[in-house]
Length: 231
Image 1 (cartoon, rainbow, N blue to C red):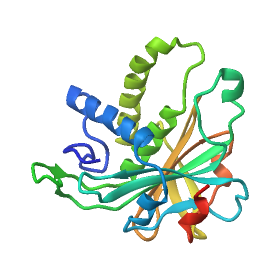
Image 2: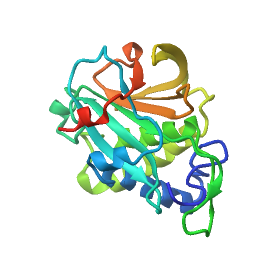
Image 3: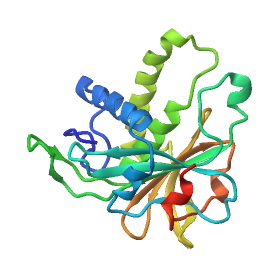
Image 4: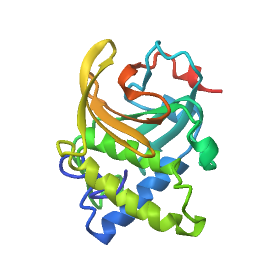
């Protein structure tokens, strides 16, 4: 998230009404789906990683780490259950997964190249990354492949707007345990899955998205050994 206005004044990701910010949203989408995998990036983080708590007994995996231009790790994801993929409609609805996104709490700061300002991260940052993450594994079955880029641009803008309005009518409130302590989350559902976002007591922000697993029964906890997620 190494561009000015990528993270907005209240942690939302800029003004989606401008072409520059739509392009920034597309870049962030690519970062979520294409940033490097592997344990090394997770070990470089200066914040704790979160995943589902011990009540979840299914498979776990490392997914993606997002880093700034200077190599500072800013966010990353841990996967639980099936690996999210773009599949045919018949298989699409059989997927059962939850992806937990951990976002470092950052103040307003200069960009790595000194040419701009990166605004503070917040719960909206986690909501945006979770929403865009869900889009990477979503494909309306009735849509032609050639139209997906246009659809993705449109949905990216919508996800951006929703992340900027967590108190709006599209979100509901949900209380879930984080390290055993009930914490408030913003939650929304769509035909493609669900997204939620909140914060942990240590200041990091938590986003999550999933399909086939109910969000209402989830709990989050600090990952004690991130290497255990490596396959």
